[in-house]
Length: 121
Image (cartoon, rainbow, N blue to C red; front, top):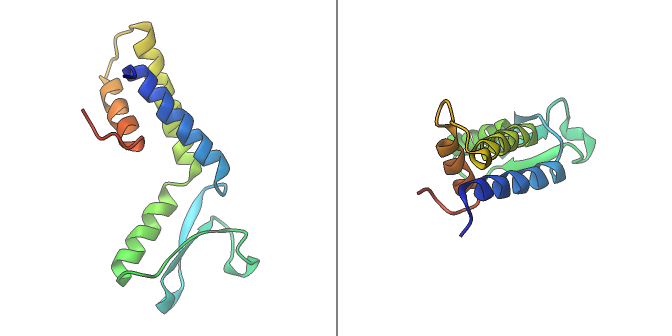
């Protein structure tokens, strides 16, 4: 079984790998009218033959597609990289046995476990 610090580092590593492989952020949600929503690289246009397209939402109801597109756009790779940095900081605190001023390692571990699909403990 992995230690809490190892869980944090594993999640941070996976976040970085996925974020670095994804379309560069930031992203934005763009309405396509009756066809739903696109998530695009911020500043990108639909006419650029997909180079800036990240995802398309148009299979649910209007409000559900809008909510999904806006959420995905807000969680672009730069956000994942910032979270990964935080997880590594908290792992370092745990590894050094330092007191955590805000008990941040517990919250970081919950994020790491959720990201790794392990739920919370």
